[in-house]
Length: 373
Image 1 (cartoon, rainbow, N blue to C red):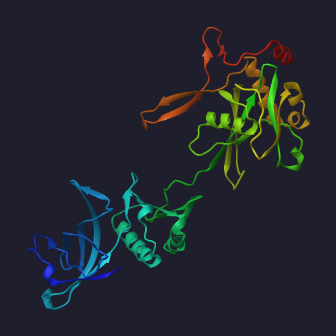
Image 2 (tube, rainbow, N blue to C red):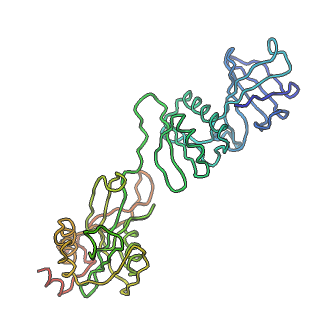
Image 3 (cartoon, rainbow, N blue to C red):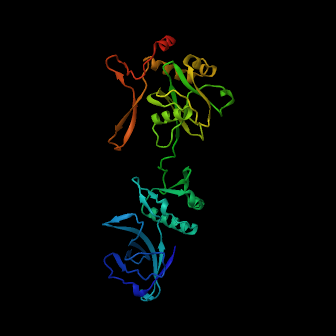
């Protein structure tokens, strides 16, 4: 907190109006440059030596009319009997810049955090006091990588880690004396696998450079994780392209697996997608892939590791059944919900009303039908 001295010649004290007494100041002659506001309007109750001040300033969080205003709190004292001395001292209580969220909390603006650790520490304590008095609930504090020195300060003030990305750490503080209602960090990672088969009934498969000893030599489907804000169907197409060089078109989600305590104790969703090949020439650009090729379907399913794994055997059985139109997968459809007015991807199967079977997006060949039967 800064102690600011106001020259008496620059201060005008208005009449005290009602129970909330109003003080109006012209602050052009502040000796401290830390507060650049004009004019300043303050109110205080009774004989309390604390005033709530409304000031026009840059980066404020509340809109009044066409101007931006920020609410700041000051402790003050008069140097002299009955406040008649020409000097008045104000002790500023800064509040971190931010905005109110829809759940009664505050999201701190990471772009306007102070770099100075001492200033941040005092401002954070003052902010928590203000937010607690205002009845705020959850506080979200995003600390960029370049301001990592502020992390231990926030920890000492009671903030907890929520999640971290390459460029920041998100911290939270729950003010009410009751169970925390802030949502937890993301609980799942999402992976995709692409089942691609050409007109020769050959499956597109890869061998990975780095794998568990038991999986050495295994020919498997192209797989990988989807990226942030990436659709499941576009992620499947991208992964196949990166690992094999084959361009494909998404058809359906055949199945998905849900497992827990996988990587970093997170849960895992893995979607098996059926894709139609658009190109046929294999070109490996992925550093994690040792080799890629088109492999006869029956040779692929007869691999001991595939044949002996109940889950992968079931997945391949479903893919073959889909090609034979004996199983319906989930195709993607773009819809807008009135709940959030956002365009979303909804996956569901489409049934041919004439045949009461699956839509004929993936036509099987006589050779495949013979292999299935």
